[in-house]
View (cartoon, rainbow, N blue to C red):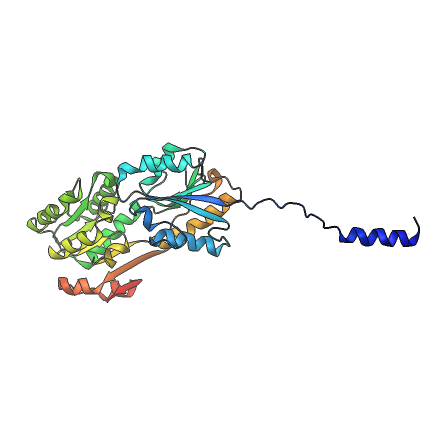
Length: 329
């Protein structure tokens, strides 16, 4: 080929469009969410109303995940109805989501529904005791995440309540059968310290008012509410009834205090949901949940509602005020 022919052929070739090799479509992960107290509408989309799920998505954004580009959620809310958990768990399994995030009472239903889809706990009261994991160090199955270790904090709540309301009057304990281990933990803590408890076991929300009337009749000096889905969805009602009964009440979650309750002490649930995003990230990158150690809470919060204290005519000890993480005026 002479020089002119070569140049001509090169020029012609440069005008022919070249097709770039096709890029593989980016996988959009599907993250199942099973919430026990929320409605599905409260946990849907990139800006959900539910504070915990919102914190989870914020944690994922902090790790570089964009909703709709890198992942979407498949939310299911049980609306505080435990009987819905098995059906909702089965739905998420049928969808073959990449990972499921849940907390509390939804976890046993998920464990029964699947042994292969990774499950991240956004707080479990006692994952080893409840049979969700073999140990905290090595869960050994498809479930890992964060533990509340709430049995240990039951005694601490009782201690703070007696610091707030000292004296020989019994502490009324409101609980239901699903939280039996926590009632037993409260019994053990009280027995060790010589404190009297009054058991107020209820089976449904309709019995709460009667139980608090019984506490007043028995001259209880204060109230310890053992958290559970039954009470959580009636937080404002429980707080109102406790105040009406003139019972200074200790709660497990700050949501009760924000709804008008007096005082709460527990692990920071919002931080736990945000931290759950780290486990989701590791699993999506190939980590085996069986080998991811379960984390225990490191951040606890004491929340006090001063408006409710004034309503009860109660003076909060200065030492408690100094230790409070949040004071609602």
